[in-house]
Length: 170
Image 1 (cartoon, rainbow, N blue to C red):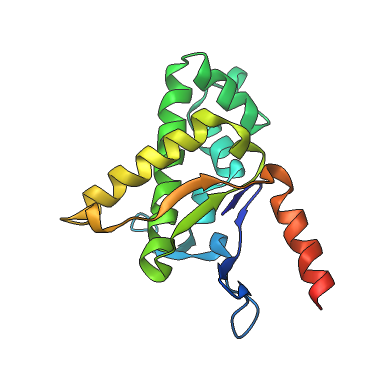
Image 2 (cartoon, rainbow, N blue to C red):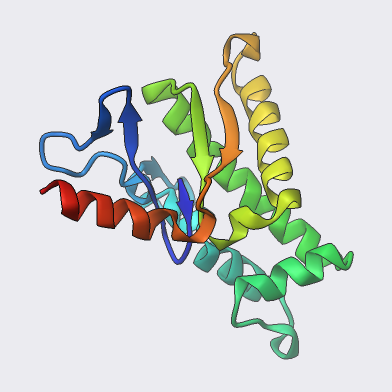
């Protein structure tokens, strides 16, 4: 699961990348859900991307406190800013729902998180913990869910390297 302007990724098994019939498998940004406030079908990635983090923060911040980049929200979070802590908590909760959705339909051994934010140890630990808690809240007995959450080996370059591999395989 790559966290960036949107969210993306790929599905893999022991044979390699799973593309799906229309080569759309792993487009995690587009995992649907019903927005009960609007009645629309929304995309989970719109709530768990870096763009979402900025939007969630700016929707709650005073005009003079609005940010342009996700790292600004993260810095505020790490410095103890209450609004940033609430916003990052909501954002990570949204991401854990996306991870739970992936787990329910694919049940992978591991989900690796990439993107620049994946280089932050605090972030991976927070996502891992929230994912566990989300599983516990969703299932009566969440102990059967053993999917691990780890960071990608190539962090911010994970999606670019994946695209290069894809082109070379064609």
